[in-house]
Length: 413
Image: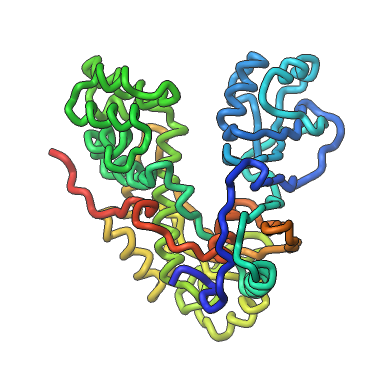
């Protein structure tokens, strides 16, 4: 079962044929005070990830990247409107940002630096190109179902990288299998489309490091850095841990996401149905509590006050009990890991948390645009519009596009 609305036919079509097909705008957690030591900018960008935009802004304004605050991460293949914060002294130099591929939509002041998570959610406007003839009617029915029962809070394939292996890299980090991590980072040549990258991956597997580095596309800075360290005599462990901590934590986060998605799939289509032993989340404040009597608590779930959760695994995460708890432990054991595995040190330890299996959707509207369909809706922070599109379009995922399956990895001697 892939969908919460499996009994309703999908609309088909395609999306993200251009950046204009996908508009996302952050909904701030609080209004700016209009004064303070931090300059808040609302920027609009396309063709840039959040990290790439921050890197360019820091270079342009001669700041350290950590001096820039942001509330959420946004994809490159979209038009994205998000808030960032800068030290107030940067205001006199904002004209320098005109040379960057972004627009400043608003400028304000506030007391504190913007932090990750400082947003209520995101507003989306999506265009589905050439869906079926009955697309609007079908979309309205599916969206009504989602408004009642919630949107599956899945991460989805986009979370697992271009080759679908970011979570595999996270697993190899936890297993401390650094040699295999190096091969996986360069990629499986059979899954690579780019000819230069494909050739580089083949050369790397032949341990022709210098040739592989020369063959890599220019944009692949971290892969080239890894090869350089290996060629210079560093051990695989030293080379891997020499990569940016932000990148390595991204791979660990991708593994958390993949494991969460596996547990979510096990609960479809009844994501709002409580079980004894569940850890349920209160949507109002994010607090979790143990469900001792599912029948007694179910009316609160039916009113969307609470929802079952699954873990984002980590060294300190609280696991569910009874049947849900057994399922959580089993999905981790199947790939040879334990909660203690997440104690990596080196600034990479992940403590974990809980995530609701479903989230509310609001401000829904649909509009026919000739042969295309426009969708507008809002989701809470940390939730993905692709989860809504997955329900609407009901595209069967091809084997080529599936994320890499994980198996227990024996430690390399």
